[in-house]
Image (tube, rainbow, N blue to C red; front, side, top):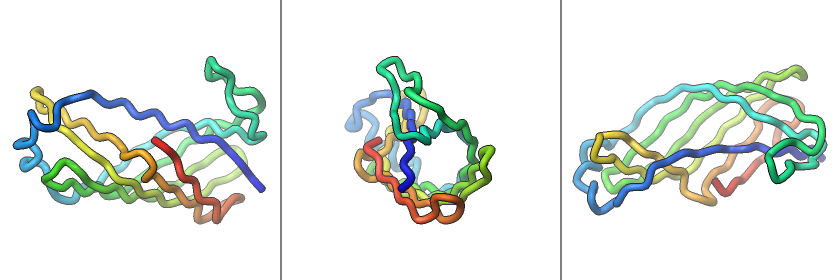
Length: 137
């Protein structure tokens, strides 16, 4: 059995949903996105110290992601994405999905937040194919 740890960092701003409710009508529909990220995998399942340093050997890998975000006029939405990661041991592909909430601030900045308990990622190919991760984001 393979275990690993993924650290997901989400930064958001807080805004009153009621104050910006009319702004949601400005953003609705389906939008494509692409991106990249880096992740630390704890291959020994030892975890991290309180200061976020790893307790054992880790692998750093990068991945690219592409997907679709759907924004509804009520401030909710969904994300469905595919990814490809590469590390020194090879590569893998996966798919993820989760629900979101969003607000538009008075400065017209969009803030998107994952709904806790809805994130799921399944690895499709690679050494740990078939593994599904569920995270409280």
